[in-house]
Amino acid sequence: MKTRHIFSVILLLGLLSGCDQGFDKINTNKVDPTSLAPSLILNKAIISTTYLDGVSTLGMLCYNFGIVQQVITPYGSSLSGGNYNTYNNANTPLVWVNLYRNVIKQLVAVVDQTRDDPAQANIYHAARIWKAYAFMILTDTYGDVPYFEAGQGYISEIIRPKYDPQEAIYRDILKELEEASAALDASQPPVTTDILYGGDVAKWKKLGYSMMLRASMRLTKADPQTAKSYVVKAVSGGVFASNADNSVIRHTAIYNNYIANHLAAREKTNFYLAAPFVNYLKENNDPRLPVFAVRYVGAKGGPEQVPARASSDPKVQVGMPMGYNDVTINNVLAENGVASLWDFSQINLTTVLKLDAPEFHITYAQVQLLVAEAAVRGWIQGSPADYFEKGIRANLEQMASYDPSAAIPEATIAAYLKAHPLDNAKALEQINTQYWVATFLDGNESFANFRRSGFPALKKNPYPGAEITGNFIRRMPYPDSEIVVNLQNVNDANTRQGPNDLNTRVWWDKE
Image (cartoon, rainbow, N blue to C red; front, side, top):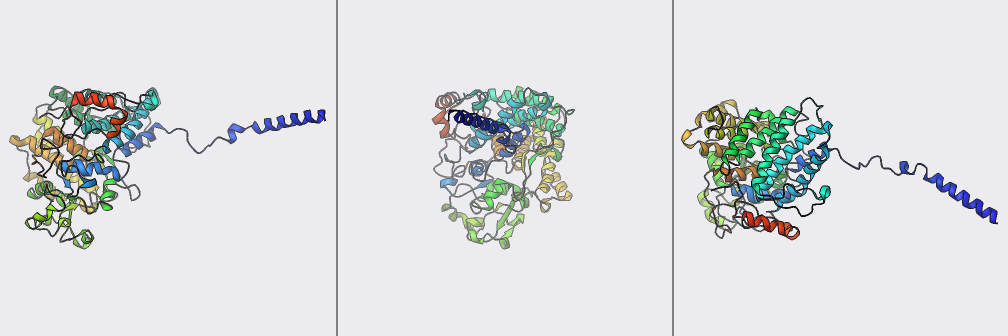
């Protein structure tokens, strides 16, 4: 009995030993990755910069577009914001939630993973460029934000990052763009998975210098000397040279343009082109108006907004006046020549907001207009009028990228340019008003440049009961979630910057 017992134990140990052989190999999942290539994480960050879903676009629809008076809604409640000049804590945090919690975290991870790997140097520098761009949107929206300690939760276990002054943030953004753009190396094998340029290092360099130009021009009032020095560096380094250089996300029938998706579905009848925007385009016989606008002529309700009523004829477009809600707007229908609030012009869902319409981050048109302003200021050589004309032409030609039907004929472009030369006496207004048009549908950039330049010369939204003390909203307040989890650092930022409300100006937004 004793012998048999010992034999059984030996046999069991042998079986267990046999079972253990190859255990790691058998139980290793060869399909599920344990890590992602930094180049793919960078792609994810680039894609996410234009929002993660349709709901996230409400921050832009309800605030940015309304503040710069391009797109407006007469409705309140969940859609209130720039239309009423009021605080809506459901929509003011959306830029923060998307950029800070997603995009920045991804970019910080890419930079950390590639910093010391010579084989991934171009990915490292591309990530630095995109990180600078993402932080520009974040700090332009909120002012002082976590920057140097941002995204360090997993890397350095910093869970309550301090908020850095916007001045310090912008100085480092400019440094990062200068260093990263110069360091990109075309001799390295291209990163063919690159979603923006397919690994074309020359185009990434142009993107970096073009972003540097944009960042430096933010400082025209706050720090003109620094602005001038970096404008010169950017132009010398080589900014965009044509529309082929544009930074753009292209969509498909499956991967939609989220603003288009939102306005084609749940918000289809809620948002309208604002009168100041439509009137400017009409008064200047702007050939972009039929590309931007559609009106369902005579519609008396949402169900009547049908293709049979749709018209993009510039002559029939009517922008919704500022200062009304869905009830008081009925008092001005007759004087605007419309049958109902549903009869005002809307964004064209067959061109600029097709479901597969592209979204632009920065364009050759915008770059040329900023160069034109820099030339007006005497910071660079060249003719401001020539740069101005190139900028307008580029945006007019850019319309073809939305749909073949949106292409503007050369004769029409030439006629528009001839009718709108640069007037030195009002050059800054002309340039920045054209920039307002050239950034249509990029609410972050439209809002930032409007505050920076003061143009176009918009009138205050006259809606009664506004919750701001000035004429326009100047920034978004910090999210309640930040106040809960990072109160001391939020308070330090408020002490330095000003009250956490819609009135406080960011550092570069000088009167």
